[in-house]
Length: 426
Image (cartoon, rainbow, N blue to C red; front, side, top):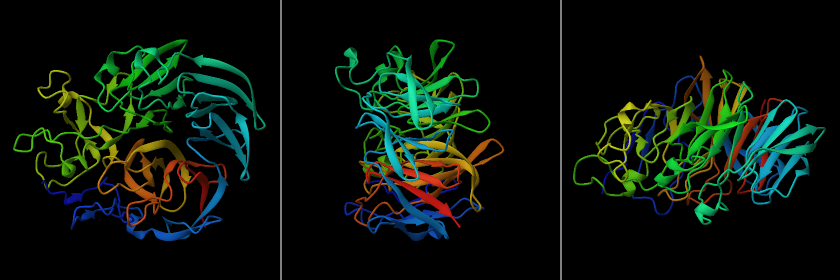
């Protein structure tokens, strides 16, 4: 069995609050090196969730966490121009609107609504098979129109009900283009790259035309526009990747390798960019092929996938642009947003809701991550909120998305606990 004792270099996941499950290999340790000029996870302190049921998070010192609203199935978030908070609920088929913790249904009867985005007073809602536009005013919507239809989901005849990542996200670019995430149908379903419209992509809709903007994006649920107008995605990458390097372990699927490979990308997209899936995987190993290699998540290159691209004939992995930032394998990043002015040392940056792994041993814990925005670039991952996972690996909560509100507080959705939290700093 390969060793999984690693050193995580700058850009690594901060696991000061992490806990191992009962299935964890004996003696496993993980040394972390926090990014400079920031509060690392070991400096976070237990903070009771006010108004909750005795739960406690780990948060920066002096920060307050409150249960702001009970919202079963709360997923993605968007603040309306009037300061109300919108929450999508795919399982319920609706979008609710919150004001001072009070909620009401904004729109219902939808097909797995997920992504939410505003362009002035126009609200875009991404259903699993289409994107709708509404006129929004004073906590109500009107004039529904379908902007993009025919998006693939589990009801698409050619898929026969099989679609692992049917939920869609949506963002509005500075040129008014719509960006839509289209997840892959499975873990390694290469046929997605030849579909129409192409799956495992970020699509762009502009001037009545739908086109592939970026491809090889296995499940880019995190989708947002940065302050400089760039489009970024946070990606759920593949599972059960075999060891790709020469040696006795080549081609084997081992827990010790799968636990840390491949990384989950946080990447800036441009037209034509390819994030490699399912032929190339971003590699966190600083010493490729070395079982004790240190790990890094900044500017990481791609390696060939042993299952799908062993000889490199499907895609030249070395030609792909390295991934700007990343997270530990199986982090399951979901919602992505950009905040203009967070308290303390944080300031401007990206917020990512890390849902936590479903099949890793030990499980990777859920958290809210922060990536500093400096000189139109994102810095490495920092843990902002954690403590959702118990010592036995079970969880009491799983954050989905975090957004900064007009009041400068951070609002966090949690689909597992069915809650929206308000996080503020004194």
